[in-house]
Amino acid sequence: MPPPPPSPGAAAPEGPILAFATSSDASRTAPPTENRPTPAAARASAKASQTTRAGQTLVIACGALAREIVDLIVALKLDRLAVTCLPAIWHNTPDKIPEGVRAKIRAARAQYDRILVAYGDCGTGGLLDRVLEEEGVARIDGPHCYQFYMGAADFSALTDAEPGCFFLTDYLARHFDRLIVEGLGLDRHPELRDDYFGNYTKLVYLAQTDDAALEALARRAAETLKLKFELRRTGYGELGDFIRAAGDGRTKEGAH
Image 1 (cartoon, one colour):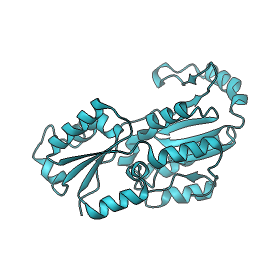
Image 2 (image 1 turned 135 degrees about the vertical axis):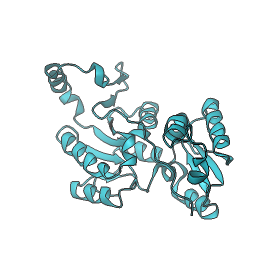
Image 3 (image 1 turned 120 degrees about the horizontal axis):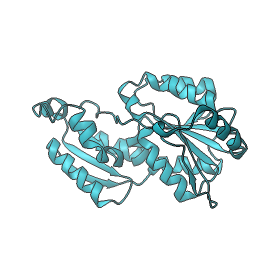
């Protein structure tokens, strides 16, 4: 069996909650860390926005899914859905994920009617599910985002037939050089390619969007890793179903 694919590692903002409305206030985003308001201004802003969150659902997500979830919220006009993210780099230290999610849940519980989680097990060995059971919060089904996007049946069929697949998503295609080439030191030690990827036979690009530039990046990644290339236009897959159901109020809290 090939080793597991390297985990996504770019950090997403920990603090901002992205809330979207379909009125003239099309989107509101908390300022980036370096431009955050003073504590007094932040408290005033939070107090002013408290009433706007009544009836809202909060999705706590992995930072590697942030762009896709935001795009879904806007496209589907889910004006009662908000999202906050934990750093994607935590996939490299998955022991941080369960308690990080718990902290997010407890910080937000008083402000939102419902809380859901857009994480797979993500290498936590069941610890994330234990936390969610204790907190009474549901998450999307599945072990990781590759299965979310492909769908459980298609993912199982592919990996059973071809266990040597290395997967890219839009996120990983976009950040391939930084996360894989530089992150694994292949730019400095190209001979490590065989150590990391010698058991892989094919790079499968799971495309969430029809983007020629991202496809070109994915094809170049396959060439870099000396793997065959396959494109699968999955769209948002089960992640899209999960976000749509969350926005419609059909995802039950406390059930996986």
